[in-house]
Length: 489
Image (cartoon, rainbow, N blue to C red; front, side):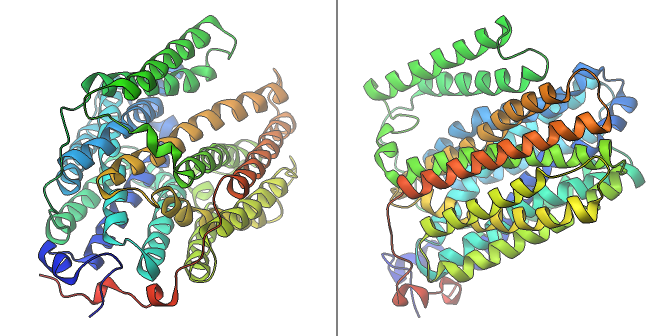
């Protein structure tokens, strides 16, 4: 019987750890959270017709989820550390499932927007708790590399398949099923978490919780996301946008000052950022999230508005990207036994940048086979190479009682990056398109957006090479460890 490095056999057995079932539960949770970020997009026109949304009001079906999810991730991570990962995971699943059910029965625009906001709250609890659970269950060696490979594949596959599932459900079952589809997944995840995830030791509470810090961080991050996503209506230089972003910056500055001086238990210990792995991985994640968030948007619009593809077929045409991500994640597992995470991040970022540069060559009289298929696979493989290693790097050297906070920080950097990237690159593409939207002008705008996305990925690679330390791959002793072989009860 073998145990993970730094973990005694008795401690593992006493915890009731079931690594295989824990990994399966985390995979289902992450797939569901990623799916919900994209499954609604294709059904927006039908949702607008069914509930009577205005053109501006319809954007809140997306924004309500993005605001609560992005704004509450740090708080969700801290709650997982303070009150226990299993408890927060179950609470988040309950909220997410209930909101999905209520949203499917929505009879007015406000009902659906409120349901999406509660979904975001549930996801903000789920994502960091699940990731922290994975980090502590697989602390090192070959099992950790494999576990993060599975997590990265389900994470990206959920986002890519969400477009396909959303298109098929909307076209053949009705838009309400883009909400109902979460309910059976929640039920499955609840059963697996209840049976397969150990309660763990009682969390160590070092002092009174920093309530004011939580309010400042959540308010600042929510306003930051709000200011970014509203640039589709208000220009970056408009008083509305500038005021919103200024208030967000003031709240976040006040939060940083408070965390440095508070006598309470801080929401996030600023010393975490002295860890180059944490700082570098989050900066890398921010830029990759910015590029990838915009890529889904541009490719989906290119297929439907330039090539004239229907929603269901457009969803199917995202499958090569999903297959590329899964292949890249599997490759990251294989290479992770012999190559350091820093190397995989640089290689994956460069490969994805190459795919974006290829995407920038799209033409208004092109086709899926000549303009989308090849770069989709290249970008997918590059993205898959990055996903697992960036999570593993961002939690390396972090104390067990702070893994939830580090996980929430990583999820937050990706969500903020996706919102920021979509706003900045979308604005640039809109300006290039100009006032008259024809297939040719739209194509020019989307091509520019992809070019800028390639530049962001090159910047991410530079961060990986300059900020992250050189580390060694798992040792031979670590590679043979396998916690799935431990007895479970």
